[in-house]
Length: 524
Ligand code: NAP
Ligand code: MG
Image 1 (cartoon, rainbow, N blue to C red):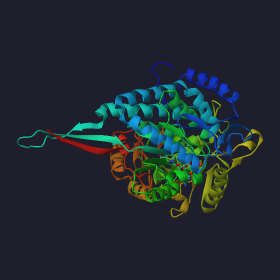
Image 2 (cartoon, rainbow, N blue to C red):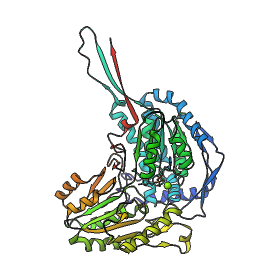
Image 3 (spheres, rainbow, N blue to C red):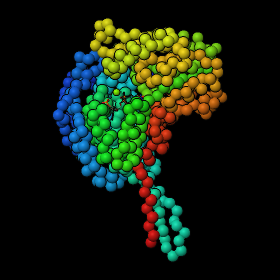
Image 4 (cartoon, helix red, strand yellow):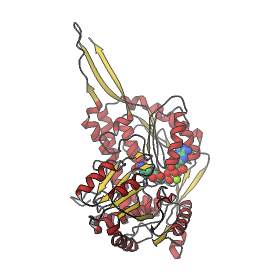
């Protein structure tokens, strides 16, 4: 790739030409191979289930991307047992050896960056730069986990020597893996939100079973192949596909799982938390859940910057990011000016086939999201007013996909339920506030606490950071008001209903979540 260019969500707005060329080449190749049947991967072998399901593109439902295995309870058990068998050898290897293999997996992902990104655009409907970002972030998350292992010397720490007379007593604290780790991922970042947790679980010595969302089995299969081809021993990673309600539930309800990372909605996450606790004994479960992310803009803000950041975060990936900006609180004196800019920028966004260079918004993920969009916009039109958007596109090529225009709603009373409900669609709501204190009160008045953005003076930003209840907060950021975190720069995680661990992925405190402490005390 072009020298001196590092792709992150903060740099992707102005990529070198080479990036576009290579993506386009990969897209041609990927499109030529559509419609194949893909197997599960259990114990190093391809594995078929008793039934299959079709994976179609949200861009155009005529595009059959692949046929996938509809795994069931038996398949869940086979995968967990394969991971169990692989655990003793993998966990007892030197951590340096695991780091080496995982760096190789990250390099393999990089080598296939463009092909996986092209598949991702077709499967999720993600625009090309966001698709490239998802895959590049995956490799960086894995590398970050590797460098954390190194920085912490494998989490082996010598403790004090007991002050015993006549003996010498040596104490070590060692962090050790739990065993079989289950990773369940959502549709919207199938690469990063599968590969990131998988990398962390593996480098710390766990073995893994991964289950992607029903909407995105393809990208995760391509990712599983990267781990396999990097030379991980058989059974260290296992990939199973099938519905959350059956296969996912079977995995979660099984005593064979020693720890879980689940990324998805608050509803499903809360249910899983209870079900997972209802088995043999309590085991760790890391939940990364939804968001209802506010932006706050005061009279001292640079309005141009605020408008650009807000529009990017509201409508990137069609608003289907856990970090999407869905609520905008604006101080009265700048309300009209800012809303005018936001609407104007929104109306300039290109909607269409996300593989095309000029397109910013692709389709929403599936029929049920498409229907929800129509219900929510109708509800908002009744409760307030739609300043722009509110329509689905059905003409010509749009007719075969799930295309929803980016929507800004205003004048919706602050007690309306949609101020608190995560819609997960290209819909954002604006309102006036008297001052920063009022904005903060509303911003915090939700069960979520994932990300938040602020535009205003530096003094106000300090107050904002102190009082906002979220895991990731940004001030005066044109690259995105509430979105665009990157491992090592903005570790990502949520407070309150947005996450269970209180520690962010891609940060200092993440890897220890995948290990348990053992004290080793020897008296000589
Ligand atoms: P979802 O419907 O909650 O599904 C997430 C995963 O859970 C999917 O793989 C799903 O499989 C599986 N699942 C569903 N029911 C299950 C069950 N009973 N047992 C085990 N697994 C089950 O979420 P989504 O629609 O894919 O993703 C959007 C949500 O994820 C949003 O709420 C978003 O905010 C959140 N999210 C959070 C973060 C974060 O870092 N905090 C990041 C991205 C997304 P099926 O697809 O087969 O149902
Ligand atoms: Mg879903």
